[in-house]
Amino acid sequence: MQNSDDLQKLLEILPHELRETLAQHSQQDNLVEVIMDLGRRPEARFPGKSEYLSQTPVTQKQLDDCIQKVGTFAEDNRAGIEQTLHRISAIRNRNDKIIGLTCRVGRAIYGTIAMIRDLVETGKSILMLGRPGVGKTTALREIARVLADDFNKRVVIIDTSNEIAGDGDIPHPAIGKARRMQVARPELQHQVMIEAVENHMPEVIVIDEIGTELEALAARTIAERGVQLVGTAHGNEIENLIKNPTLSDLVGGIQSVTLGDDEARRRRTQKTVLERKALPTFDIAVEMWERQRWTVHENVAETVDAVLRGHQPHPQLRTINDLGQITITSPVYTVKANTTANITHSLRQVLGMKSPDTTDAGELNQLAQGSQQSEIDALEEARLAVEQIVIPKRQPVELLPRSAKLRSMQHELVERYRLKSHSFGKEPMRRLRIYPN
Image 1: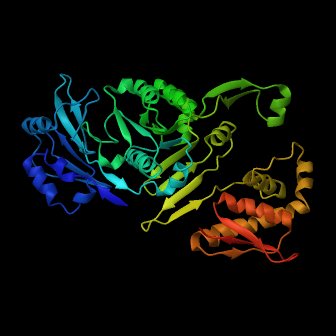
Image 2: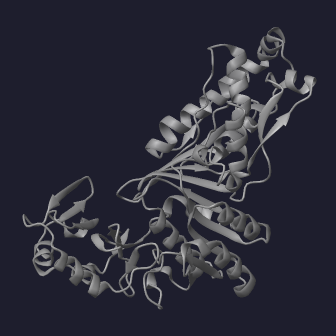
Image 3: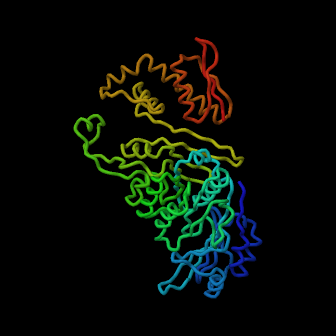
């Protein structure tokens, strides 16, 4: 990954003594933000730690000098520095006077979306979730640049707080050829979203921090017009959105449904249940837990349906190491009991096979005998080969000879890990070979 931060421009707005201290600091390249609160010692924050920059408390004159260099703060109490990604946020007292500043370093980091580049290329709408500071805005910026420069798409960024493309009239070069529309006031973001579609014919719209019902509705309107959406929303994981009445429309919305007696018996549920109301606005959801560990829900509709029915969703876990090597771990399916019937049910889930429409435990056990045991053995062999050898050791593996039907099931399982395989040899010794990426 490459890093560009224009740090010197941020240091220039700070008081001289603080600027000198930071200029000589060994962790300067890892600086996250500088905190200046009236009557308290100024503080520098780094990943996982913080330290005081001076033993002398911040004075009102120091704050006023910084404010004069920064300029006007918008209604959201944020300001920026021309053609940089830095953000200065103000804290005011009851008389509207600024008594505190948070000077956050904005960095353009290139190569952050390697883990999901394949998803970005699909043209599907992607929603990024995660706690503040985990890198959602950085990822949006990189996605916008890749779509505009590498795929020559018409990309428009809705930049409410100038965090994606920086402050000033000229956007930061980190967004490439993507265009940027600024928003005068945060409450107007939904209007600018619609304006972008109606006036500028984008193929992709990038939005940071969808947080109101009007913005969620605008996002749905945009998606229904065939425009790819890439955005972030408040919440750490997809279940937060399901429970959020304001934003649940992003994942399809939730409604209460009364089932008939037969349907309730078939599902083994009570008659009144929660169900997804419509197709999700976003096709894919990415939960950003750390900068190098993301969870991917490739089908938001399936995830939401599973959660509402009390089932465990089965996303992918994607990680990247310091060498840029990406590891994709497919979902882990759990079984309630170590029985043939339960194992067969889980394997059918893995393969997307419809379960037998029966509630009789004896029938399930009967179906699971004989040939079903062979299916279990074949699929378990393939799973272990992939998860214990092919992915971690990046080595090809040959499986035991199997029938054409079992090899087909093994092929399908391997594809779910985004790996390739092919059959070789002559019957009855024909078998599968699985290859690393």
